[in-house]
Length: 106
Length: 489
Image (tube, rainbow over all chains, first blue to last red; front, side, top):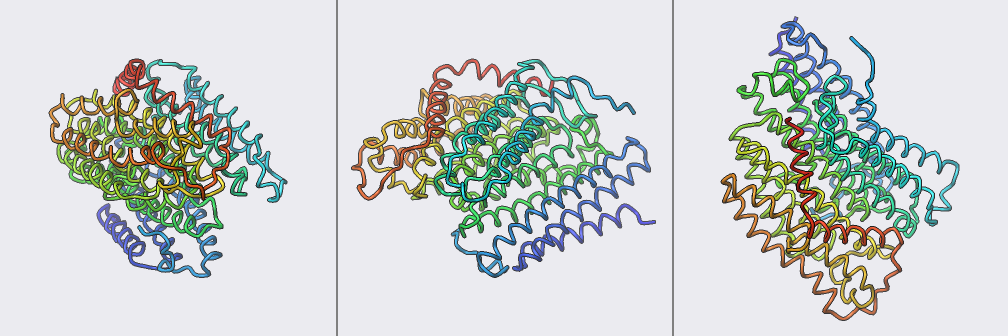
């Protein structure tokens, strides 16, 4: 099917899009989506490495696939915390624009 | 594949398991009680938390200084003295934070079981992080503790700046976890599918440039958690905006457990000269920026934030020595420093909590004449600050001495010199509150409520521990040396 390199390029592309979204976008929902995109891009990298190693059969175990399942669980928990913080911010500011959050002087 | 669980495996997760159960019991014990009693102190929550934490500490000490049990759970974790020391620091910190919570939260009408439970969950995850020996368990533990800390930072959800600080912390934290995970993926890929640290060390992937990039990315992820300089921008804001107790918890426990995990990881993987130089640069910049920026802070919490960045810089010096391969024994100063730092910082945050109870103020000028009104708090804060400044007869002095000794004997003279110069700079801002407390007139406009009992207890124990370790450091030094030897042995 796809070679390891192709899958890694896809993963790198998605990771870059996620990074750009977190840094450049000002809508909190888009930022949360970009964070999820970053984690899932790495998931693609891990499962492709895992498949490549299963083919060469160094370890014979499926560490990468298990890793990905754990990351999915963590990402779900992270999304829950992120969305609840989003709710708190919506109640205080009536806005989900990051530019409104400027009480702290960095 | 065998699916039996040995006695050693049960003993290894027992402390963390007790903490998770304690957190659940606290949540259930508060069920059905509505928000109208959030002004009461709820001593039962502190009692449950205290009992659970003491039980977990007892489970930790069952093994004493016994050597490593080897890899448990198919290499996911181990139970050695190093991990037990890390878990010990975290659990003692959790114990003091739990005891302080009641009085602090009741004064702000926000006393709910969630705060106590989150501290217990967080402590459990940190205990696992200190014992984790593969990439999956490190990632899951570090994310679990981070998620709990994000919520603790935004615990006062009526407060705008607390919510803003918590959200910024969350976004930057999740962003850095992405890089941490990417680094782990690269290491997994270049070492032929190794997940556990010992497999990574045994594989021949070290020469690969992708492996070095992976290690660097993991370092970036950890730098964020410990607040090292290029990734420190969240520290002052979050410290200023969050509940004082949550800040004390972050400053001590998050930093300590991350350092324990990072030290274990770097001891296994090495890293080579390039990585050592990058670490040395991060360390130097952290020491300089932390200490210089702390000079003109009016808020005590912001001052402690920059001081924490500076201490991260000092703590990175032994890691530089470890990574460059000049002597793994230099790592022994890390557990000692973190113990000393925990006692000292908890005493300082105890006093800052006592001042902010009911008033929510933390300005240096609010300390004016504290020695006359509250001599006990003034003595506690003085001991903590002179220990942070590294003045003899305190734990902070011995800790800095150990780091400098290691740096000089391994030939890192420049790092040692910068550490000494920045320490001298730091004396200025550490002694400014001391002068304010002892030599200024009290401000009549500022009424101090009596400090809650938990705060008084914490300040007393931590201040005494700071002086005790400063005068009799031998036992802790030996313990730290032994613990670092057990990692590799």
